[in-house]
Image (cartoon, rainbow, N blue to C red; front, side):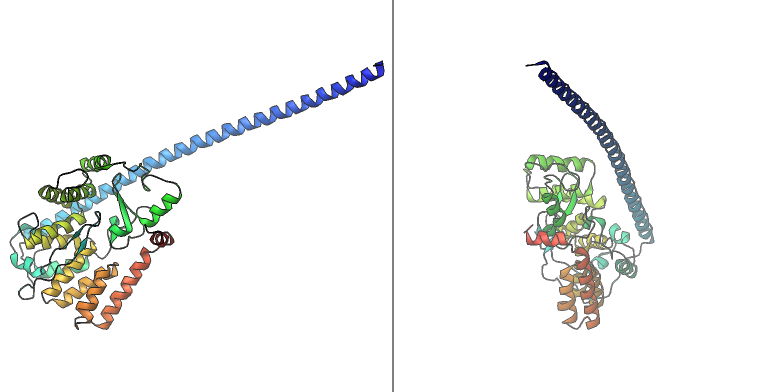
Length: 382
């Protein structure tokens, strides 16, 4: 190779080295920018985690505040009932001898339990008199009826899905599922949405689902230890059925439902009403059973309200029955619409206008319970 060729080769090599150096410098700059961006992303993630932690703390504080308000509300209710008790006015009611109606099924929030309590008239409780619970319910029958008709027109918060906040359709045990980790009743629409997002735990609190009966019972017991009224009610059903490895123990179930009712569980009041009225597992005490239904109805428990409508109808108090049916029908209870038709309109006890009002109220309530997700869940068989 001559000198000229050697110089050309050397120049080409220098150009190659220069190009490589520029590429390396550019790559280093890109790498540095990537490192800076990664650091920024990490800082953003840390900030989001801190915000999430603060939000979680705020949510916990809000929940504690809500529970405190609920406890205060219960205290106010107790004070009001105590005042009425001091008045010592006995329940009075129009109507003749109670007529025992046919048995009616009652859906429970627990695993589709169906009880068939017969329902006597409110007049039976009125004539019993003398008990502290009768006094607690307001003294004179007129005042009791006024309270029954003016309270409990809205469903309780426990009837709403905690995720979408819409009221759950009846029967609730068919259109939702209770999660023992947090005792939240989640509607089928939100369950389907969670499943589609790949969530395999509780849609509300994200706790993994229990793998067996023992772990499920342990979750319930932890909530019971914290005096969670819903958990205590659920544990009562487990003893009543003898499920989750527990031995069937009806007295223990009644004991738990009594505790839950004292803590404000409306479902426990409904169940105790059935047990005491029919004498199923306890000494029969019809007035006491009726009073449990009355307490639940005045706080928005729909099936208890419906039971009172049947009771009044069977005792010949048809206008009161129509009023009870009207209230529960407007909260979306289909049996009350049937009651308005069969025991009201068909028998001439209710006017066409009253039936039309109840039917329209029922339809309005049903619209509030509908959502695209819930309709998809129905089609999917959830």
